[in-house]
Length: 408
Image (cartoon, rainbow, N blue to C red; front, side, top):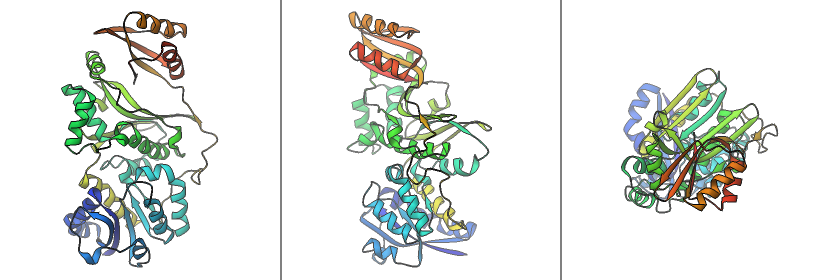
C-alpha cells in the first residue's frame, strides 16, 4: 500500500468536492489501486465543507515545507495568488494538480519551467471539460494520430443558455437570469457568456492536440450576448441549432483558433449535447471521428478529474511534461495562425434600403447569397462559403448588421 499525503489549496465548490470524494471513495481506491490518499493540509479563506482545525494550514509555507506532502491540489482559481503559490510548491519539489484554466492558458511556460526546476509534475485534467478525460485521451490514447480538428462545447453555462433558447424559446436576458438563479451562471457572467472561459480551455486543448503552444492572443473570441430569439427561431426553421463552439483546426503548419456561436445541423452529434453538459468532437487521421461527452462542471464531476490526476501522479516514476519545442515561452515560428478562415455565414439585416445595400456590398466582393429569409421586417442572408475578412469588410461597408453568425 502506498500512502500519499496531499494538500488542497482552495476549499470552495470543487475543493470541497475533492475532500468529499476522498472521504466517499478513499477505501475503495485503497483496496483497488493500493493507494491510500490522506488530506494532510488545506489552505483557504472560506470552506464549503467541514474540515478539522488540525488540517487547516496557517500559510502556504506550512505546506511547502512539509516533507510528508508530495502532491498539492490547487483549486483557488484566478491568476494571483494562485500562480505564486503553485510556483512555490513546484520549486519545492511537490507535484501540483490544478483545474485553473485561466492560469494555465496564460502562464503555462512559466509553470512548466518551475516544475522542471523542482523535478515535480504538473497535471491539469480538470482544467478542460470537467469530468471528461479529454486531456489524458489526447496525451496518451491518440499518439498514433494526427489530430486535425477540434470542435468543442466546453462551457456549461453557455450551453445551458443556448439549449434553453433553442428548445424552449425566450431571449438571452431572461434565460441568463434563469441560469443565474439555478447557479449555472455567476452574478458576473462575463467569463462564460463572452467566451473567455472557452478561450482558455481551447488554448490548453489545442496546444496538446497540435503539439505546439497556442496562446490565447491567437484565438478569435466572440460570446453569445448578441444571439437573439429572432435569430434562433429563423435558424430552427432551417433545421439547425446554435452552440458556442471552441474550434481548432490544423492543416500542415496553418492553424485556426476561434470561439464563437456556431450554427450546426441538428443531425450533428454536438447538437445532441444539452443543458450544462460538455462534449469534445475530434477528427483524427487514423481514429477518424471521436466524441467525448460528460459533465463539464460541478463539485464531484470536476473532483473526479482532479483525483484522477492525483492518482496518476502518484503512480508515475517520473513527471511527464508537455511535448512542445516552444514550451519555454516562444511561439513556434513555423506555425502560421489563420485569421481568414472560410465558412458559411448567417447575416440578419434590416429590410428595404438596408437590405439592398447589404446585398450590393456582398456582390461587390463576389460573395454569393444562397438563401434569403424574411424575418418580420428584417432579412436573413445565408451564405454557403466566404472568407472571414471579406465578410467583415462587407459588413463594415454596410454600416453594420443586426446579427452575424458563422455556420459549421
